[in-house]
Amino acid sequence: MKCALCGCTTTVHVMQSGSEQWISGSYCEHCRQFQDHDDLRCSHCGLTYRNFSSTGLLGCAFCYESFAVRLDPLIEKYQLRTPGEPFRVSPSSLARARAQTVRDAWKKSSAEKISPIQDWISGKIASADSAGSIFLSGRVRYARNVAGLPFLSSMDRNEKAALAGILLSLNSSIRGALNQAFPIEDIDWMRRGYCDDEDHFRMEWIFSASEGSRFLDFFEKAYSQVNLLDCSFDWSCNPTYGFLTACPGNCGLGLRSSIMISLPREKKRKWEGWIRQLREAGFTVRGKTGENSSTKSVIQVSCPPIPRGANPIDEASRMMNILDVLLKRI
Image 1 (cartoon, rainbow, N blue to C red):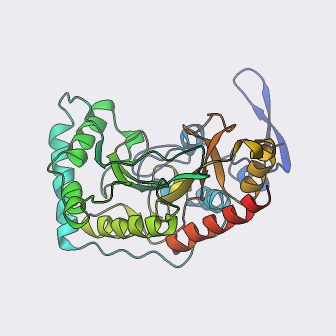
Image 2 (image 1 turned 90 degrees about the horizontal axis):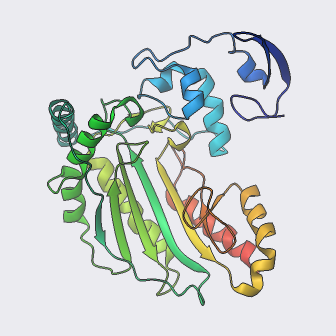
C-alpha cells in the first residue's frame, strides 16, 4: 500500500477517529510522526499542510519554511536526488526596482475588474516531418514567482488577471529585456510567455527538429536566456530550495527540459517496454498534449525538475545520451 500523504510504501497502519466512525489510514513512518499535528500551518499566508496535501500547491514563499520538515523528503523523492550547494542569488538594484514596480502596480489594480490577457509569443517553428523524424521538437520550461507576492493559489481571479496583465503587457520590463538581448532570428525558434494556475510567470522555448537534431545547441541558447531573465528581475528564491515555485517539486532551478518523440511505425510494437525503461531511468513520459493524453504515437519525455546546484546543460546532455542508448535497443 501507498502512504496517504507522500505516496511512499507504507509501514504503519492506524485507525483515526472520524466524524461518525473510525477511519483506517496507512502511512510511511515519516508522515505518521506528524499525523497528530493537524494545525500545522504557514505563519504568513495561513495555509495548512492538510490543504497543501489536497492541492499540491503552496500559498506563498514562507510555506517552504513552515512545512520544511515534511517538504524536504518529498522534494528529494520527487527530484530523485538531494540538492546541491546552497543557492545564492543577488539581484541588482535595477532588478529589485522592477519587482517593486510590479508589486505596487498589482496592489493598485488587483481590486479592478480585468479581462484575461493573452499569452505573448515571439517567433515561429516549422513543422517537423513526423514520418521521417524520431525527434520532433525540444522544449525548455521556465517557472518563476515575483518576490514579495503570494503564489497564485492564494490569489482570487481578479488578482491573478491583474498580475498577468502587468507581467505580459507590451511594455513589460521582462519582455523588453528579453526581446532586446535575444531578438528572434531563427525560424525554428519560438518563445511563449504566459501565466498559468501555478506560477506568476512561465516561459517556454520551443525548437523544431525539421532541420536536424541540434538539441544541445538549442538547450544552450535557451539557458543563456534564462540567465538574462534571472539577472533582470527579483524572483522569489531561497538558499536552501533555490527558486521557489507553487508546486515544491519544481523548485530549484525552476527548469524542465523535454523532447517530443515519434517512433517509426515498425517500432511501435516495443513502445510500452521502451516507455517503462524511460520511467525507470527517472524521466516523466506524457502524451503529445500533456498529462492523461495517449502515449500510443507521439510522446513527451521530460527530465526531472532540475535542483539547485545542478548544471542544466549536463541534465539535457544526460537526457539525450539515455534516449540515444534506449533507441538503439528497439
